[in-house]
Image (cartoon, one colour):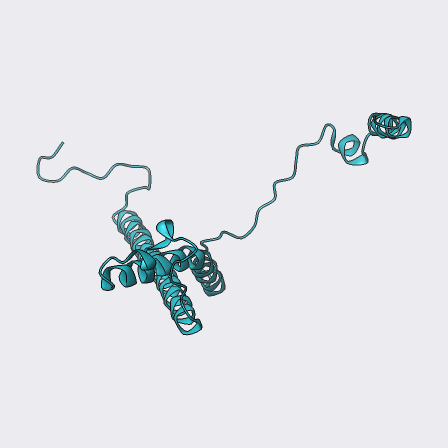
Length: 165
């Protein structure tokens, strides 16, 4: 049985919560919320690119470690002629083979290398996308310059050439 003091404490907290509304809600009534924005995650600064690489590489590490462990286990299982003692992860038992410290370090090293590779691949893909985007922006800007030099306004359509529509 719950003591009467506990009921009293819960009731007092509920009354205090509704009797004394927070200042923040009273002050914000009638005001539009402020828009809060951070610098874009994919902005063009080198610092943000390095941070993105770091986040991607660290985020990929646990997944790469799982794949490295499974690959090492599977390779040993196949190399041993499919002996049950070397069965890979989902089929391991208490009598299964346990790798030594050297192999554990090798697995971690492979996972680190693979996660750094994932980070580098992301950085290369991102750099290629930015280069393509910048090239498109430069092409659009040069087309606007050519139109303005030809005496056409930005909103006027270009003349059709050689009997086009």
